Length: 250
Image 1 (cartoon, rainbow, N blue to C red):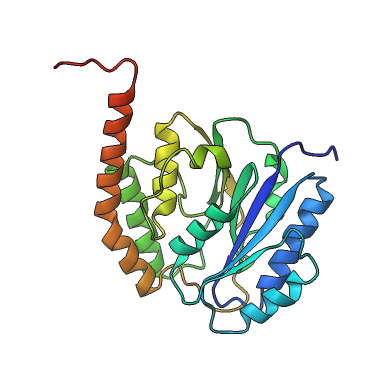
Image 2: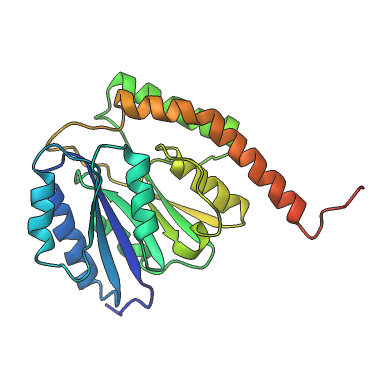
C-alpha cells in the first residue's frame, strides 16, 4: 500500500469501557501503522470513568507513548465535552473520533485515507436492531430536528465523521452537548464543504451499556436545541452579510 501524504488525528473517547478501550486503541494503532500513514496520533479522552478504564488506558499508553496522548476529565461531562476536548487537542490534517465501545471497526476508514479539500466524510449505521424502542424514538426525533429546524439532511449525524482540521477551526464551536456534531456539520455545509456519506457496520456491544440515550445526555441535548437553532441562524446571517454579493441598502 502506498504511503498516505495526509496526517491523521484519531480521537478515542471513553466512558466506563474498561473491557474494550485497550483493544480499540490497539486496533487503531495497528490499522494506521499497516496503512503506511506517515504521520498519525491517537488521542484518548477519558470522560471521568468510574471503572478500571483509566488504568487500562495508562497501561496501553506505555506501549505507544510517543503518539498516544491521553486526556482525563476529572468528572463525567458528557459526549459533547469529550469530543470538544479531542478536537481541540488534535494536531493533524484529518480528524476522526471513535467510541471506545468497539462498535465501529477502524478498518472502515481504509477507503478514505486521502480526504479531498473542503470535504468531510459522514458514516451512517445501516441498521440499529440493538436499539430499544426508546432509543429508536430518540434517533428518529433527532433526525427530524436536524432536518426541519437545523437544515441537516445527513443519514446519521451522530455517527463517525472525518473532518479536515483546518475547516472545522474556521469557526467557533458554541455547543457543548452531543449536538456539537450537528453544529459542526451545519457550519461546514454552510461554508461550502462537500459531504460524502458512507455506510457503516454497527457492531453489537459486547460489554457495558450504551450511554447515548442516558437521561443526562438527552437532557443536555434538549437544553441546547434552541441554542443551536439560534447559533446557526446568526451564523447564516453573518455569512450573508460578509458575502461579496451582499447589497448594502443603507
